[in-house]
Length: 163
Image (cartoon, helix red, strand yellow):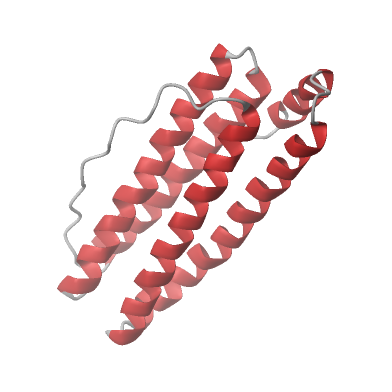
């Protein structure tokens, strides 16, 4: 049985993961509006990944005998600006998620919840990948500068991502 403090923190993380999915979906819609279907497809794939993260925690809480309590998800913005601004926002958001997972891990250590520590190792490693990917794409967008025709090449590249 999972203790109440860890269960509450895991429920907050579930909400954050599902909120992340909602933000990515909103970003996808904004990039569709900019006629960047490849970027939009990448965001939709990221949406599905974030839902899967939330569900992984959802199932974990249930498997440990905890009660899943979903929190409210804020309405995301409609406009996020240029693709560079979008990926700047993504990197900042992923760093926020990383900090939240680290805090959750620290709680699991303090509570001597070894099963949760083990579960969170996957999330810690996943966040390294999430931040790296966002940083790489952001740096590529910055390198494009005023060469907007190259944005279409990048749009095509990101559109090749599997869902």
